[in-house]
Amino acid sequence: MKISVIGTGYVGLVTGTCLAETGNEVLCIDIDKNKVQQMQQGQVPIYEPHLDVLFERNIKAERLTFSTSLEEGITHGDIIFLALPTPEDEDGSADLSYVLGAAKDIAKLLKSYKVIVDKSTVPVGTAALVTHTIARQTKVPFDVVSNPEFLREGFAVDDFLKPERIVVGASSERAIELMKKLYKPFVRSGNPILIMDEKSAELTKYAANAFLATKITFMNEIANFCEIVGADVDKVRVGIGTDSRIGKRFLFPGIGYDGSCFPKDVKALHKSGKDAGYHFNILNAVIQVNNLQKTILMPRIDAYFKGDLNHKKIAIWGLAFKPETDDIREAPSLYMIDELLKRGAKIKAFDPEAMNNVKKKLGTQITYAQDMYDALTDADALVICTEWSIFRTPDFGKMKKQMETPAIFDGRNLYDLEEIKNEGFYYSSIGR
Ligand SMILES: NC(=O)c1ccc[n+]([C@@H]2O[C@H](COP(=O)([O-])OP(=O)(O)OC[C@H]3O[C@@H](n4cnc5c(N)ncnc54)[C@H](O)[C@@H]3O)[C@@H](O)[C@H]2O)c1
Image 1: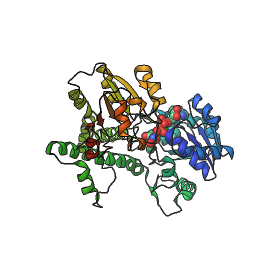
Image 2: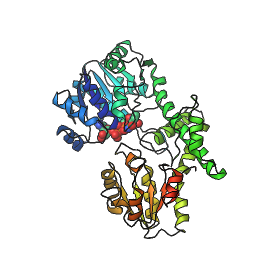
Image 3: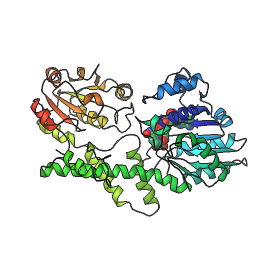
Image 4: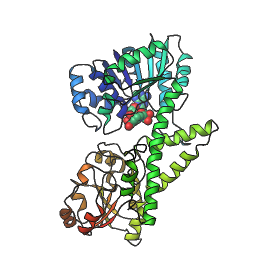
């Protein structure tokens, strides 16, 4: 099949590449000229494990091409995916200007039947809005499908190639058949393609993200309570996680949920509720608790340095919002850096993949280390913001040699309490 993907970011590029991998001819469109040029030269513009191999293979096979021209995209694809940003608007709602703007432009370019697929995370009713926006300007037949994406950055290729389920919200049989044909190679092991109405599909995505954010937030509150009463959240986590009704995943406490999806999606669902006259009490609490959780390490750092961080050297390990990505959107490291800089601290940071993105944002406000140990040179303390695997089993002896004082503020609970104490570190973590 001929596929176009409009918006070639974390979701669009993975979608396009994986659809090319199953034999489709995919044209990826992006408004960012530099990004398109980079991709045309064979460079993957983001860090996503295993993407490079598929990317190269499909470019070589001429199944994966790139352009900045929306017109080319609309002419090329029988199915047109919209993988455009839906960032948080000022009032917490999802900003639909990218999606509706593209819909307007598509309407002017339609010459034959196309299926327009909302892959972006969009509020209930967006498929109807997109349909309305296009139908107002053209008599050419088309269908709009809601097909939310569930991939996780860091596992995106695997998630796309072997999805636990595919959600397709559509009312047109013709569009449903095309979507089933397109996704058939991805569900050979029997995972379902769930066909439903557009609104339910749109809400499924928000409900999934809001549920996961709630689960993390619940555990963060349990962790905070553990500290007050002297319990160990790690033990509680294992204790409840072995109950199959609860499950082991998404129970790790930390410095709040973050990244490019959870914060904006929880707020957007909360706002959708408000607009419809429904107050999501639980989401309101989740947002409040998470805002506090993000700040939880700072008072401890302040107390450790007796309120004087001026000229203190702080090492930061981890800048990406989670491991195995270079994405820094809503990363807790940015909050920590901001607070530490305000107090006059000097920061030297290390991240295996995200340093370039932070450099673009913060420039020379902080320094960037060659490796994780270089970040520790003469440091008065280390702050851990991302649980990259390489930080899990460091050479503690080497760390101590590098640091001025062996103090660690760990937002990700990487180390065993007993072990780190025996190594002679001052250690502050979450919920234990
Ligand atoms: N990142 C994730 O893990 C993830 C997972 C599931 C769903 N989503 C959702 O998918 C959507 C896209 O997210 P993302 O992380 O890929 O965003 P992104 O910012 O990485 O990518 C969006 C791309 O769209 C391009 N773009 C913007 N306007 C354009 C236009 N008019 N025409 C063509 N290209 C344009 C941008 O240059 C960018 O490359 C969002 O709704 C997000 O909530 C994201």
